[in-house]
Image (cartoon, rainbow, N blue to C red):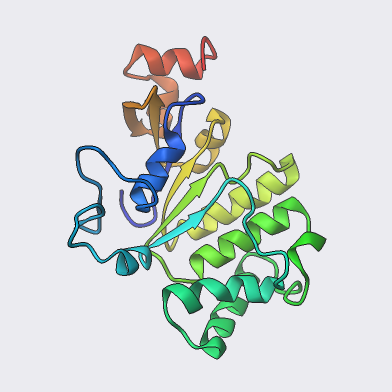
Length: 217
């Protein structure tokens, strides 16, 4: 993956799409092989996990904001913990990123008073507030309506100018809209990865073709 590239990871339920993201972020361990982030072996015993996570931003499927904290406090939390910033520094960074995602007018609002789409954009702002190199998104639009989904997808396009993005999505239509390359997983195995257009128009594997044409999945 290169800077500025959006890679979608698609496949049916149980294909280990989300598990892949957790392994990249060292939330889950691996039994074999290697995962390299900027040439650093994620799961090597010698790897400094704190420094590694400074390179990674994570957006989960379920909004995981803290309801007792304001939008600004939520967004400032990550740079304070991950980057060890002072409260004042973290707040300035958080304000910038909240403005970036369209929540500059919601700083003193509590997350429970916002829509689902706004809460997910808050989580995206918090993820990028640590200035990561890679942003991992696990089904970020699965609980959103079409309008909120469109706003998040527009934001992904903007963010791709500055970050490498890996997005897990069960929606092949979304993969086609937002990604440069698409990886298809089946029962825990990587079946195919290629330019998104090629995956959709001329898949190399029969399993991929069956999935994108709806014969199973």
